[in-house]
Image (tube, rainbow, N blue to C red; front, side, top):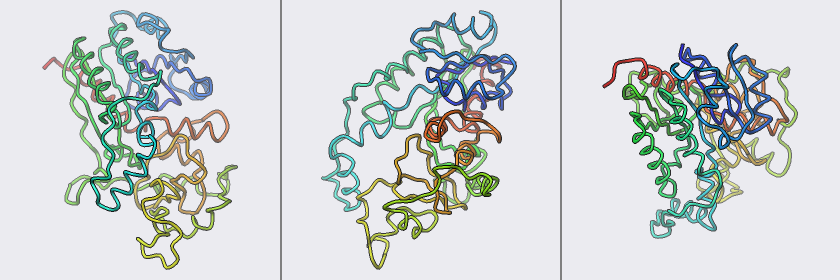
Length: 371
């Protein structure tokens, strides 16, 4: 059984995925104390150790020592360096850019579209991609899986992606970049992510999808993208009521009027509403966004505002257990902290079934003959 070390472990999405893939999770490194408490509350393997630490202070030898993995024993390192420096929010919220983009798209006026922004905002976490590469190479890992938001491929961030990919290849790793949607691997969520799969021994193969993505046209032999309804049904009863799920305030009545699968645009002239309250393309797309039980969920947000969806089709906020189910954490997985902290941890996690497919591809590459 190959040993796994999980960096930037968060609430444990990668650790759960590693176990599902048949690997032995030996070590989770995470700087956030609440996430560390979550990791310790769950059974992630009899050899599993949680270390609260900044990865910048560690070496590859430290990782093997703490994980009790010998210098010549097989090792795969997984992790998702913090995405905040690369997320859409880091460039769409520049002054005027988001509103200009949305209005230009609505009006079909290309001249109003903002020019691509290529200068990154200062953020001390941007170097954590390099730290991930450093620890993988120092630990002489046989393979790795690195995950991040697809905005890492935006013109502002692409140089950072290209640099870390080149660094891994220069260090002797055969690498396969993968951009995919979680629905393709059985997750009921339209969550796109970019991965780099790496192996010293042979080139990792992009994992074969098990389902259609939400964007895939009809005609594929694969099952359709999984709808969210069956994943949430076990938590629908009053016994799962959670403080904070009730929606009250300025837009509560508006939310009740919006049909499943729609957002605030249902209440616009564009949608034919007889008494429009909003103008289309003047709000963020997830404003008053409501799930449809017969379709996959939209991306779960780690830090939603009071009117940011997705909301449940029963006109309430999603419960922690429901959010965890959308991220394909196993039933009974426990999260520490307040509701806000639980939502943050779950929203920041990689969906376990999504990560499992990527880990399996690297495990296979590390165990087959070189190519």
